[in-house]
Image (cartoon, rainbow, N blue to C red):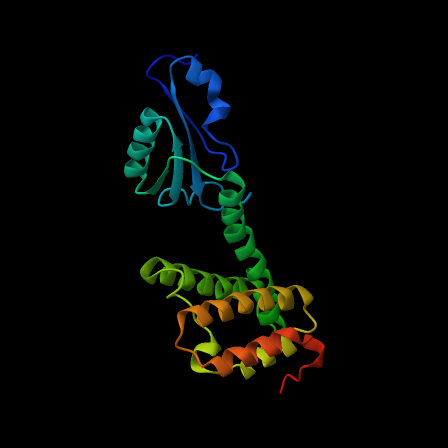
Length: 214
């Protein structure tokens, strides 16, 4: 039974504080405190200690969330309002999308290396890349963390990548989408020749089957 002065926080990213209306009516402070951490079935909640959380809710609930995050060494994003589908979509893009990219990279590594590496070694290789990207994003931000052959005016490598991915349609699709975003980011940021970006757009517009992996 909730009483005046109590606090109720839920962890669902797609739901706001309003789902705790009954607790609020009883006098409790309510809020949504969503962890920005991927919780896979076999890993549990071991990553939540230093995770980031997004909180929206009553003042008492936000204060409680601050105390919890301090105790866990976590980061807290405080919101007065949240566009839930857009916010949760961003979280899903990062969590689910990263795993999908890891799956594509793992297959390419497995097919590229002779002798075929052990699954545990491929896992470590993919995790190494993911961890380095996360460290770079944390250190310098999402735009400055970007690494791409286009930044050294090398669009032809993009073509060679796509040619090699012709037999892995999922990797091809993800790579095309990712490089398309990179091209637009570099176009807005500057520092890369317009001719390089134009060549990259031309390569992306072609089907991978037409490219030579030479």
